Image 1: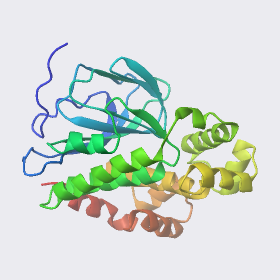
Image 2 (image 1 turned 180 degrees about the horizontal axis):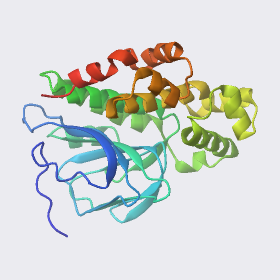
Image 3 (image 1 turned 120 degrees about the vertical axis):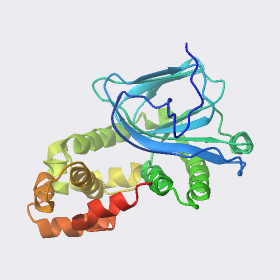
Length: 296
């Protein structure tokens, strides 16, 4: 296997090109901090996504947000599904593959420094660890905050991101469960409902619609999400719609009214109120606000 050059902002050679889209940031090594974040991001993988490396110069924490796949760390293979995180680093062979029918969507962050290994050892986070988090939403939000802060590229970005990554590692460790604890009928039902919402969120407009599509009672759906998620089913549905609307506004010249209709909101005024509650800025100003946050 060919050696990989040291990754850097000028040479992000470790990033796969087998992705549909991504949001990433990079920092140069400064050696001013014993715990340095080097990169972070979100990848929406293609069906043929495959990573196969003999090692990596930093520690990497990856967290699966959607899709399916597999990871092999130091010769041990594990299944990947939403809520699974895994950790690897220098000297550890690793292979990551996406399921062609359900491509992976995953967050990642890389970190290094003299204190990084000690931090992992102190908190029983061993490279090669693969585990599941039942309530993944706080971890997703922390990763989104990491990417947003890292992309600002200000003098505070590095120390902020270092604190966030340490928080992420501790959250993953605290919430880690044996995968066998998810092999229950209730969790299987929750997973089925979650996948239904993820695949049909544009056509589902209410909690009752979700319940009908899944052939379950709405109160039972709410109890499932209370047990296995940090959002209600309707909050989860709404967030997916707003993420879709945000992508439309950023990646096209679509109008707010058109974005509302395409996201299942016939009333653009109601859409604007909901959008602002999720993204903290009205859709009419979203493009400008996001462009202002891009590093220069």
